[in-house]
View 1 (tube, rainbow, N blue to C red):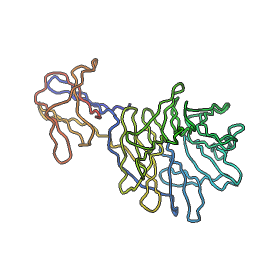
View 2: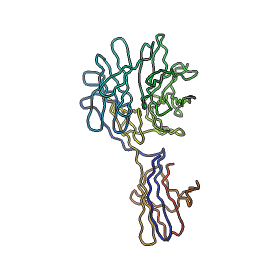
View 3: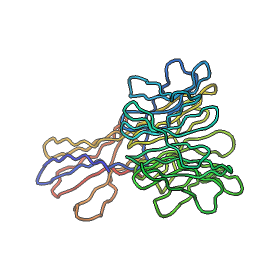
Length: 343
């Protein structure tokens, strides 16, 4: 949780303003693509750094690192396909494909290190958090299983009762991904190190979870036909509406930033969705105190007389003018605390 605070004293009252982050917020969307690329598909984000896959005009599948200003191509020597899937700090994971096999890789300080589950036919590294890497592998008999690699040992991940498990991202001890059941239906999952929880967008015929940061999970779902990006806060699902998209997928998340890909009907482009966080302000004129904040949907003003309690209640008397919300307190005589809370 990120909290910003500001206090003002008026007529014996102290008003503490705290902007508290919640899950239901609006986003600004920024489109980006590798220069000259036919398609750009971001998969992971860490701070200002984004990694993914792009397809050039010759049909080559190459990885990329984008720092907000410059693009760097990532390509494993001898590989036909290089796909950068996850990033944590300066460490990047992904996988590369040659004529004979697919192997995961860890890219750090300019060096590629192979990530390969012992005895596996193919290994795909998808996510990284600190020194822990997750992904999936295919056995020699064709089974698909997830894995967790801590730099020394590989641990197999398999959701009970499912025919295939694919680990896509990791945050602390929590892992998300997708699994396939005996009816060939794909659903997402959350694994906390002890238990698996199935994740399904209500009404969807397919749900795949792609990224996790704190309690927030992103991915995509289908009902019939196109894919839609979503955000899940472990209690409710929100569809992310990328402007102009015929379909979209949210693939990675870090704090208030989400990356993914959207289709304009012709090709795929990257997007960066940045959460709009309203700031609560206070001003004083004589014995009148005015609170004001941008009118962003999904937020409400709450107040409390004692921070030692949880007795927050909705503030009454809020008005809206030209996109700004206002609450005016005339001659306040008691201590009041205010916060913006997402709904």
